[in-house]
Length: 236
Image (cartoon, rainbow, N blue to C red):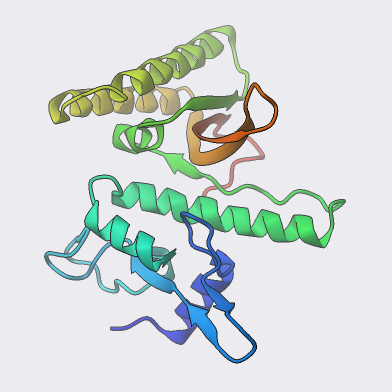
């Protein structure tokens, strides 16, 4: 199979002609006569047996959901550094980038328009959590209040994830990471049993330094714990 024109058009439109990592404009005019295209459609899961993040048994690898739009440099990077860019992280980056495109376009059309719903991925495994909180500079939290017992449990989970983020920022081996992921997974199951879901996103925020002149980019993890019957929650 190959990427269809319909899938290709949807990917470029949803991505806003920008790389999902560096936001570089991918197709632009160098002058009045010539144009330059540095955009590439990157497979999150490769169809090749020895390709990056390969999984066997998938009927069609050329779907919109399995593609992320990148510049040439970042395409090479994500397919070379597969441990740094696992499947789950690329999925998050794709969703977060397309949210950014949507919100940016809406803001440019009308600053008075109602904000668009934010689409976040529901987190169901400890491994997914680790991919989001690894190497971050800060956290952001929000949660739906419940009973006193539920609130205390939610607070303990958020504190645990904060502690783990500091730990895995050090030299933690595969065995320790697996143990941490397993423990987080058990906490997520208990959270779901109590009637809550965890949603999360990894994003870059530009913060002004103390001198009020220079800015720094901070990688942050934002965690949202919502009741499963909340009107804000729509599962697809």
